Image (cartoon, rainbow, N blue to C red):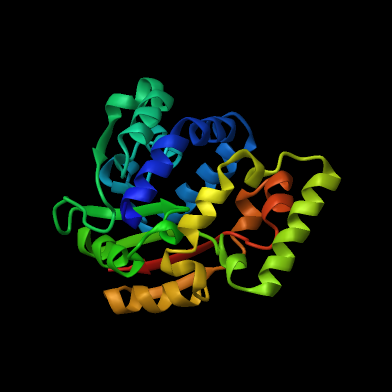
Length: 255
């Protein structure tokens, strides 16, 4: 089994559990926090345009969190994921909005979508998990219209597998979670299998988001920037305790 097949099988198996996590996000304050952040970014990115005039591609939609939030706000949304099981969960989570979203099974590194067809590409917690993230940035650039924007939320999730300082910080997070009596996010997954995959994908060894900014420029993006403190606007206390050593960042760029 090659790496892409391993990733496919892992997320197919985890689809139901990951969907439950997304359902929790939809049911608590994170729904409001993330929706506010996304809408602010898109409104600022397309001043004077109404949501229904803006086509958004949600890459690696998983159980549909971003796609649902954006469809609720009136955007034209296409949601892509690598596994059928994730899209099945996403459709169920979308409820009455299912028919408002275009759902596609596809590989974000080789999208079967028309060049220059989207105003914005959004993605969360996807890039770190890709065998060829540089190719993904090229594809996201390709499918954007001229003047289109990329909003990519991610984190250095598994750098601790290759760096002792990061390992110590990761272990401190686990200890803090136990002390605070929160649910340990890493304890509710097949962590051994996830670490096996993380050791093989390239970004676990890279300095991020430095690597991402360089890759985006190489792909052709302009006005490339990073918000390293976006986590302060979208994470709850439980998430901060769980992932304090790996804060989510936002990298953006314009075609």
